[in-house]
Image (cartoon, rainbow, N blue to C red; front, side):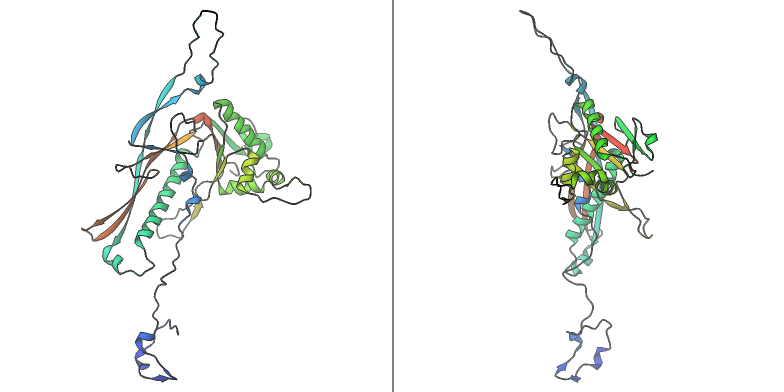
Length: 351
């Protein structure tokens, strides 16, 4: 087929012989959208770490939960028992903490008349689901930074500094600097958390900037990529290999980005998590009784009980404006439940 992008006056071809072919108006290709290809830069769910945080599914938007006093749980209370005497009495205190979920919502509306006439590649159901789920993920990542991934709520807070002379109990040498030791730092931080709680820090939350510096650090390169055979061959630098070296169960790396520009301006894309590190003891499955975790997400299941992980997708028709309406409800709250079980490092790469 001959493709003509600038449509000519087709009437002059009708009835004219061109060899054995005759070109009529119906034969000419008018530019139409492809039916099997579109371009859409929706971020992958793997970009976001807040989606991979432990949660408690709750039936009420407000409530309380018990916190056992870990000082009492780890205090030696047993005593020698004398003949014909009663056993010493021990115990522990519990305190109550509150949670209150916050509802965030967004709607995506489509003119029903337009929807009925759109070409094949436009699937409004698919568009709405991808757009709204991405918006919910961005909002959750931002909320994670505001509520969890910062120094404010944690017992142990550290700051990166530019020179070894500034290093003390609350300052560490930045990992971009010569002489820095991520392996030693993380070992010391794990020890700090275990001394405070009795639990092993097992998960580290960082941005892509810190991950890149970590895997390029000469100390990590030497330890991870050496195969131990002395033949100079190098192993691949995988997430699992770094976890094993640092004695962590998971390293959660946020690759999420956000456009900071005002509507209509040139886009201004930035990382959401950057230049910091959160190390914590976490239980990564859905939480239940006797859980020990540094923080949790309380996710409201919704009135119907169908909200998955605090997310509920909805669809309705609005006859008043003749529109198809797609909505997402994100109803949850991040809560620090054990501030001793987490440690945050600010400015770990730069000022």
